[in-house]
Length: 149
Image (cartoon, rainbow, N blue to C red; front, side):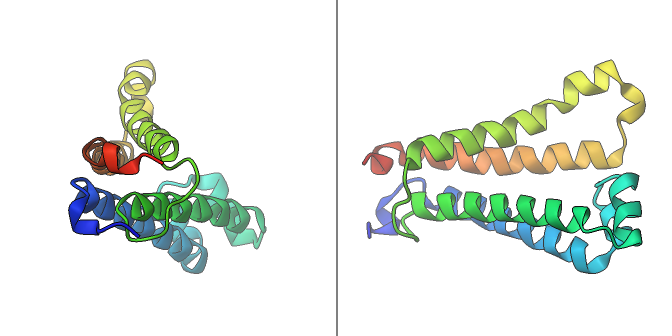
């Protein structure tokens, strides 16, 4: 395992990984918190109602999202040298960065197209994932040489 301190992007990637794990834990909390938690975290009224009915779909969807977020955290930790090297590490970190940044910036055209859908949650969640994408992006760029196979 490489020396984490020697990787100039490790701090950024560790922050990004921790943020992804935090998001995963919040998704798990929604499962246990029930419909009110789904509403609060912006899952939508349909998901909240389905959870209230005991429908399994909200739980399954949330578990899939949680799994993806945990995988993304693992890629960040791998890039930082905290976990063993994962396959396609550079590609994975670039794709994860792009998804976070795309999610953050999609708010702007959606707001222009449908301003009635812009609420506090949409604004805050876009800013939050912008921070996630920034941590992954800066970490990936700074560690690029160390991420080579």
